[in-house]
Image 1 (tube, helix red, strand yellow):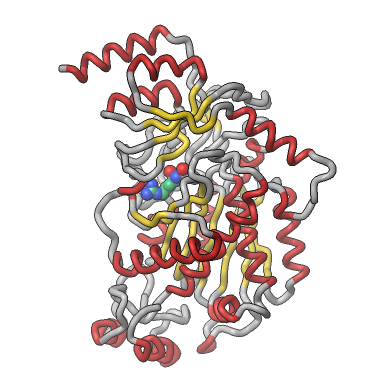
Image 2 (cartoon, rainbow, N blue to C red):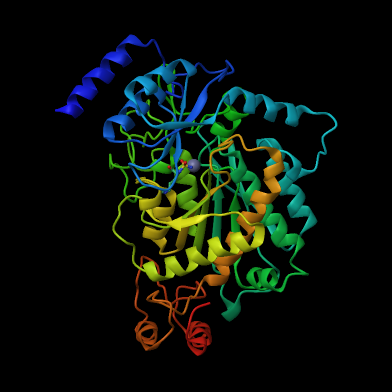
Length: 477
Ligand code: 0X9
Ligand code: ZN
């Protein structure tokens, strides 16, 4: 009774307020969008009606902190909509008082002629990241090979690079096992690009001085894709700083598919994505309807042996395991927990930043995501990292945070790859007879053969050497 009364009351308030929801996907192209005096509010909803109210007046939920679907959530709203919250009695706190002020400060930093022009002292646009990849490839021949995964909708190249040491793969296999680092499915999450490039740069510059990094590069190949949504990124650099999706024209001025809702595993659920094209989490008409997700997934499927993947996002400081589309625990939850906890511990020890590890229970359900696809399709240990901050600046993170956040990513990435315990085939954190049985029968836990460590499509003597090495150590790192 009380609830429906509230809804009617809210509907009346909404009808009386003249608003166009910010971020409703209907912004005219080419006109810089301004966010003067807009707020980011963190609400603590009392019930689902509070969430619906914010979804309606905002249309741009920035993200959620820990607490789940009915926990805290951040929304960008117009100042003129604050009275709606007050009248409805929704508990909230203002996280950002003027979104435009943050964007203006960011612009001023980027345009300051006296600013140090080193790569990690500023955010970098598409052209600059692309040329930096070329610089790395010529500075580190034998380590870095530029690759092209395909083209975006607007025909921008989705470029990336392979990074490994010249030490050959063991057992004569054609390629080392691959770890995939992806960023910028969401256009406004600029820190992901910089963090991904920072991890690559540190891997290269510390190869000779850091024995852990050396052993990682000698054992694995890393594939970096810094800008997986080039069209959206371009838009954020040209007047639409808070654009999230790709730039697919749906109809009229309605644009964009959320690439991280367009993957096939768990695709289409309304619990974690939207069927409406005006939504910021629009999943597209079918799985892999978008050229960007097609390019990324086709490349991943061409990799003989994919063992781990990180998808960088922002913000909230979280390490998120599969599944993202359902609360059911994934196979190998013990290994995910061990590795995820080691990552947050490594980040805390490395930079002092506090990240939290968990599943959809600490954020919200998201269906059709890249990490679910990577895990569900290849069996790779696949995680989302939500980088800094915890809401003080949100997506418009000051450039002074680029290197510290890069170091969060680096510590997390090293902990993840160091924690891969590949002989633990059943992922229960001990390498024991149960794994030996799985190895001996070359049991196929996932779509790829988990016992083929070398990725040559055979489970043979060179795989046994790797298995036996793990078996001797008994427990995982
Ligand atoms: O919603 C997303 O795609 C990701 N968050 S963001 O704020 N960067 O948009 C998170 C997706 C992954 N995971 C879960 N929701 N569990
Ligand atoms: Zn994101």
